[in-house]
Length: 97
Image 1 (cartoon, rainbow, N blue to C red):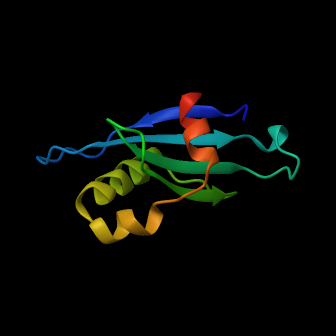
Image 2 (cartoon, rainbow, N blue to C red):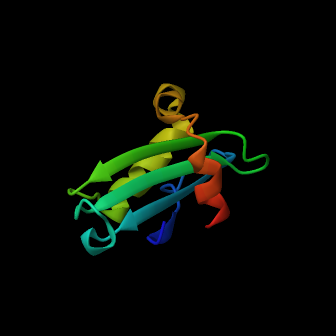
Image 3 (cartoon, helix red, strand yellow):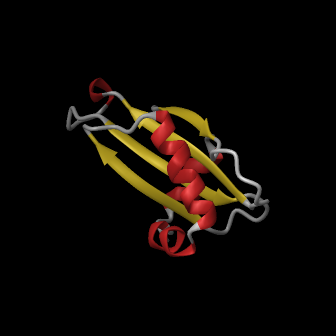
């Protein structure tokens, strides 16, 4: 995991929320498959017990699109639930950020 991290803030919303967002990406030169890789990641802020991810290959999103997605995760429970993952590597990823 030698990629780069960017903190993502949702668009301005009035709701208080418990979610922290980031975007992780890797250059093709850093990967065995020589493809661009990106992952929109989120977790709950207090307990770090819930983790979510949406992955991207080659066609990476713009930061404004990620901010919009973060906003949707805060306000849309169905979307948030669809992105929640039990992947045991996600807590390890967050420890590096």
